[in-house]
Each structure stands twice: as structure tokens, then as C-alpha cells.
Image (cartoon, rainbow, N blue to C red; front, side):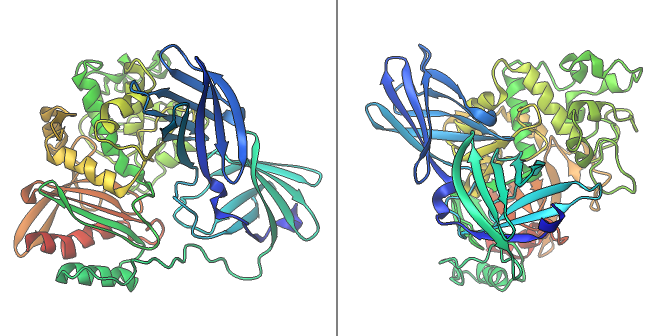
Length: 532
């Protein structure tokens, strides 16, 4: 295998092979057929409908589709589970007996590049791994593992998307078959790369078309000239109306963006809905009431005092600090996500403070919150989230990342379009209402935006609410307060109550230290635009 540790390159014959058409055909009363196709049908599976027109279809390699026919029979909604992702799917009725929709497994509407790269690497313990890399950088990447070799055959899988790869090694090439649900979707012939890889170089039709406003012109020119690097989208709503929406670097409004930790604020909203429905009595309930007792029978009385409020405010007292300290925290996100049992790793971490006294940003807190809520609701958590938050907001194009047990991960990792992120921020600016419908209790929004403790491991010592950040910006001597959802790489939802405005910035600054660049964009360009 050592002879193949190198960079490999292939050209896909067709960029549409990862954009699937999903079709459900009603054969007879109670019987239907699921078809999944790209350039050809590669999955055809009969299944049964319940009397209530619900269904659950399980295929190979963990691929499944769970859904239901709408009461007026106009559409089917549900989730395709593949790898660690739950893709929300809507199939629209096209004929009396047929429902059709799309499933973009790589989260992009259409690959901008037909180039596919393959890196085969030798680990320190003489093991090997293979990593496929798509030439379109809007796809957030594979999490490949389980590499195996038998003679001239290699196999490996992407835990995130569920794609499976089977390769045949020849002296000069690697013939790779890519499968989903046990079925082949495409093949690629790889040869050794002779030049450096070029990823994400797009020619967008929107590039270098300035908006006309003096502040936005300077902003857009700075993005086009790569002074504000890796900016993907900027949107602004004022008084409930979108007044600016622009995409850059090949992005568009159809691509669900990896929100990273900005989705923690969505986790907060789900907690509020659970509380409003009486599934959780109050935020001062201890989490040991909802989680298996085995996690608390270790003689650590402080751990039994952790409440839901403590998780919402990052003040559990657990050694669960993701950054900003000079040691490796036992329950940091990197540590527990690389373990076999995330909950065991987190709740085995020592207590470094009594609960509720000190706040340190750490994803283990909302992760535990997700476990609490999952145990409190009476249906799959993803269905609860869709029914009570996303469907009322008419948000359909989204993806939920799960943990190793298939439960929605409340520590981060949702994928939503920037326009839907803006809609979510507007929900909070509206004190929990959307249109004429109340989705969140007004009191929950108020409590979510309260400032409980300062995050001691952040450079700005930001105030923190219920999984919402506090920050302020200075403009012409006036201080503007902002409540923010924030995610790694520069994913921001800014709620600006004083200006009756919401702004969204999405970015791709994961390794260059510019993950807070959206704060600069807001202060230097967007606030002056809003104030004018």
C-alpha cells in the first residue's frame, strides 16, 4: 500500500451523479415503490404504507427513508438518514400516484467542478487512510475511515454522508466505485496528480457587480478583491423585510451552509418549545432526572446538581472547555467526538467548578441538553424539531447532523440556507412569532437574550444567554448591542433589536484565524448602511 501514498486525480464524466432524484410511486392501497436515481435508477425498493400513510424504508449500509404523505396528499415530507446526516426531504405530487423530489447528498445544488481528488496517507502506526476530496469546496468534506485492504482491493467509508468507496489497485491507476445504500452511483479512474490541486475556483455571474450603495460597494469590492477572504453570503433584514441578499465565491441561495456552532441557538429554541409544551417542567430541573443513572453513580455530588439552565448558559462546571485554556480539557468537543461513547466521555469528566458559577464555552453542554430533550419528547427528536420549529417557519431545505447513535447533535452541525438563518434570527427579533403564529414563548426569548455570565475562556469575555452570545459595536460614538449565534469559520446571525434588524454572514475561515471577520463586516459596513 505504501506505493500508493500520494495524491490522485480523476475527472467525473457527469457532475450530476451526486444530485439524486427521489420518487415514491403508489402502486396500490398500502403499497408503494421507492426509487432513487441520478443518470439512471440505482435503487428500486417496494415498501408498505401504514393506514395513516406513514412509512419507514431501510436499505443497505444504514441508508433509510422515513416519511409521511400530507393529509391533503399534496406532498411527502420526511428524512433520509445516510451516515451521520438527516436530510430533510420534500417530495411533491406530480401525478395521481407519484411524488418526486431531490436529494443533494453533497449539500450543493450542482457540483461546479467535475474533478475528484484522492489522498492516500500512511499513519504513524503504519495504517492507511484514504480521503476523497471534491473539486467544489462548497461541499464541507468527507469524514472517511474504516480503511481496509485485501490483495488489490481497498474499501473505506465516509461516516458523514454514508458514501462507500471500493477501489481496485492497478500499477498506474486506482479504479474507484462509489456506492450508496449498497448500490453503485458512479465510477472514477484515478491517476497520480501531476500538479497542485485546484479547489473551488468558480466564475460566478454575480462577481464584480456592485450594489450601488456606498457602504455596500466598498464591502463587495473588498470581498471580490479577496481582502475580506472566504465570505460566502451576506443578508440583512430591516423591519421584517430582506433589504440585502448577496452570495459570493460560487455560493447561492440553494446551498445549505454548515452552521457549525451557530446551530446551538437552534438547540436553545427547541429547549424553549419543549418547556412550553410541559415536556420539561422548568430549567432548574437537574439533568440526572433525564439521563441514565449510571452516569451519576460515581460519588461526585456536584455532577448531580447540574441543571438544564447550567447547560444553556455553559456553566455546568464540567471540564468541558473547547478553547482558550492551556490544557487539554477532558470533555472538549475534540476529545468526546473521537471517543466511542460521547456521553460517557463527557459525564466522566471531572467537575472543575460547582454548577452555575463559572461559564466556559464548550459544546459538551448543549450536547447534553440534546440528550435531555431527546429523553423528554415522545417521538424522534428530528420529527419534533421539524413539526414545532422548521415547518411553522416554512424551512424545508436543511440537514441535521447526528451523534454516533443517530440522535440530532445539539452541539452544532446543522446545515441551513443563509435565508433560513435570517428567518430564524427574525423569529427572535419578533419575540417568538412568525406571521400570525407564535412559535416560541415571548418569555423564553426574553430569558434567552438575558446576560447570565461572561464566557471566561473567550478573549472578549462575552456575556452569554441561553446559547446566544452578547457583543456590542461602536459606531459614531454610539454603542449598538447585538445578540448573536456564532459558528466556527465565521457563521453568524446578528440580532440587532435597537435597529429592528437582523444580519447573517456565512464564511469559510476555518484555519486562517479570521473566524471573527463577520464582526468586522458588521461594524465597518453593515451598521453604517443600516444607520444611513
